[in-house]
Amino acid sequence: MTWEEVCADPSLQDLPYKIELNKWGNIEMSPARNRHSEYQGEIEFLLRTLKKGGIAFPECGVQTSENVKVPDVAWVSFEHRRTTPHEFAYLVAPEICVEIISPSNMLEERMHKGSLYLEAGAKEFWLCDERGTMQFFDAGGRLEYSLICPEFPVKVELPD
Image (tube, rainbow, N blue to C red; front, side):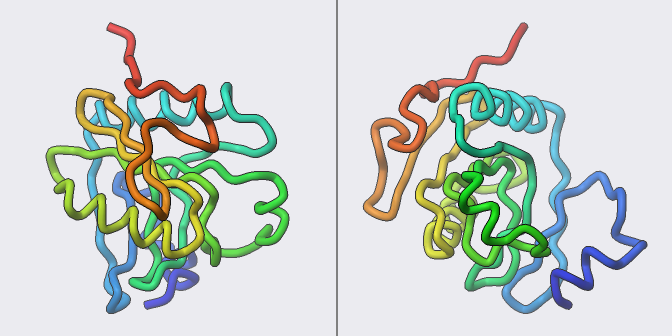
């Protein structure tokens, strides 16, 4: 199955799950808990607030060497966005791709997806754990903080 077919299939619309394609073209779905969605929204908000010159948004398709993957949050510059305005999936990953760890997925899986995003052209991959602690990576490995958005906190706080 192709990503275009997934996007066009009416039976796959409005599902409460994130859909991705594995390297064999099979659909994989991941249900998210509320806490996962809260971190997703807060990270998107912080990126929109702190990083100008682009947009932050949830769940966009990114074409990788193992088919289409969907980061929980992405930030793309306006310049990069203009190069792929009508694609079903980014052929070159947005500059920042963020994954949020949930009880239903493993750290190794998220780190592997991060390496796929970097291979696909992302400048940075960010990882948020279940407590809001952020880790930042680029092609050279782990970073102390984001080089693209140095003001981004190393811990995302949710309201009580």
